[in-house]
Image (cartoon, helix red, strand yellow):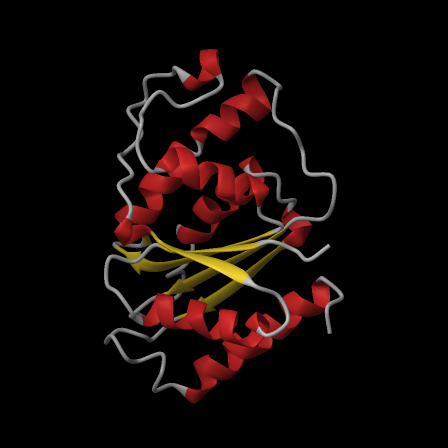
Length: 196
């Protein structure tokens, strides 16, 4: 059975560095495994209200585009999340999505109704940052790992692609080392699926 890949571009800036890195990964694996790409800027996803309803009902009571995307996240065999670093963490759009995934946390750790995936599920987090200072990704990685955990992806099955020094919109595409690293990561993702 062909793995289902869901790739989520979270940046509000279309075709910038994080989305270009994501597109490079998809181009590398696309001729072997089809993928669905979702652009968060095209969807309406409200922030979590912190109401706690999901801890009682096992679902989010807000009705917006999250409901359909949540089902795709759970159904994916490979989940790829791409986000730029804004103010030392993921952008607000990515954080809003991840906060809404609290419903998975409620199902998994409070209600114990979460259905763990039967097979190996993989996660790839792509983060881009304009700065090159030490620790620039220290606050983004735990946020992405939360998403992977609550959607049924084990830590040993997650990969990170962290690219710094990419500030202007086209910096990624003009950086051969960053492009090469991204293609290598795509190859490693395929290898981990034993699809070579």
